[in-house]
Structures are given as structure tokens and as C-alpha cells.
Amino acid sequence: MHILFIGYGKTARRVAKHLFEQGHHLSTISRSAKTDCYAQHYTQNIAQLDLSMLPPIDVVYVLLAPSQTGLEAYQQTYVESIVPIVQALQAHPVQRIIVVSSTRVYGEHAGERIDDESIIQPADAQGQILRNMELLWQDYYPQQSIIVRPTGIYGTSILRLKRLAEQTQSYANIHYTNRIHIDDLARFLAVLADVPDPAVSYIVSNNQPVPMHEILLWLQQQLHLPALTLASTQLTGKQIYATRMRATGFECEHVICFNDYAALLVEHGNAT
Image 1 (cartoon, rainbow, N blue to C red):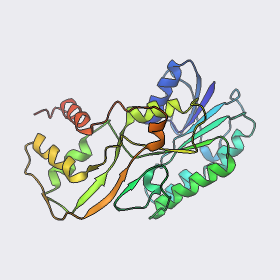
Image 2: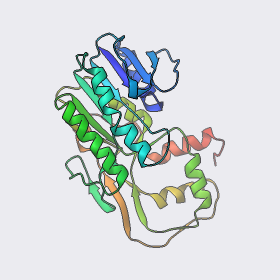
Image 3: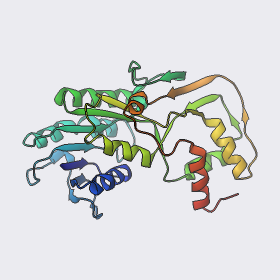
């Protein structure tokens, strides 16, 4: 198959490696030049996207991320990009289009359980923009589109968490967070290129919700820092489960995030 990536960052490169090893022909569109050997790379502005020089495209991955913060950048990246992409793909026999969104479209924030059957009710403007994007893709490609909603992607750096552990003396409440290792996300995205009878959408998570203060306490112990205190047992966040992903038979290789964080600490020279 000829597979096109629109957006080619850290996750997309990992997906491309899997698909390249399976023998697929790959092309990419991105803002900046890419040089890896997995694909033929094109540098284009999505607003003026031109795919006329490409051979027929069978599968498309859309993995976009704003280059700036703010609602305007969100709207431009996720929503205003859709029409130029759809127009550029009109001449291609697209069988499947895989769009990466986010679990931010689920607005619950009191420790609730969320899975693929949960009602989608965004609670903030960014979540609503992402939901608008999902609905537009499903309108344009009702049979071909697959929406993928990862939880928090980790696995490349621990520096932000280290800084948070160093700066946190008190944590407000029990705030559930949810994670998916970048390599597991990439493997599952690669599976979706030809999985039979795909669902319309998939949450992607390691199915191990963890209170944030427990992660910070663990890091503080590893780094020999003073331990934080928990100010309240009130529940916030959400506990997310990837029920449809699990139903495909896919299994994550990275289930215990503390094991991966320990490896990252060693990589950064902070082994205890």
C-alpha cells in the first residue's frame, strides 16, 4: 500500500518505521525537511497542500500538532486544515484515514471512569475544537475515517516531571492521570493501517490510571527529595480505559510507567 503521513513528528516516525518494515511505500508531508530513510518526504504548507505528484494514496495518517499555543493555533491546525487536505485527496483512492485526536474530548474531571462507549462532552475550548475536528473528518470520510484518542504520551523525556517533583511540596488532591508509551501508541497506529473491520474510534491507553501525586512521590524518593504532602482526598481527573483497543487483541509492552521512568532516570544520569 501507499501510505501518506500528514504531519511527521516523533510518533509518526515510529509508525513509519513499523510500516516500512512491513513493505509499504510511504510518503510524508511536514512543515520542515525530514531525512530518514523510511519515506519520500515533501515539505509543504497544509493550507496550500498539493498531492498531485504522488502515486495513488491508499491510507492516510493525520498527526498534526500546533506550532504555537492558544485557541487560534488549535483551530488552524486541527479544523482549518481539513478542507485543504480533503481537496488534495480527492483524486486519490483513500481506503482509510487515521486521525489522531485526544482524550481531551472527554470533559469529566471528578475521577470518573471513561472508556470507548462513554458520551463525549468536552469541558473546555480545546476539547471542543478537537471534537469539531473529529466530526468534520467523519462527515467527509464516513466510511474511511478512524479517530484515535491517546491519553498522555510519554517515553522520550522525564525532565518536565523531574522539575515538577523538585518544585512540589504539597499536592492539592488525588488527581488521576492516564498514559500511553509512545512506542505502544506507534505500534497500535501501525496496526490500524490494515486491521479488519475497524471501529470508528479508539482510545489508546495503558489502562493503568495513576494518581499524579503517586508519580511525584516516587520520583522524589528516587531523587532523594523531600516528600510532598497530600492536601485533600478529593478525586479529580479521569480514569481512562481503552476497551476497543483491548478488544482487537493488541497488548501494550509498557504497562507500568514507573519502570519506564526508572529507565529514563538512568538515561539522564539520575539512577539511585
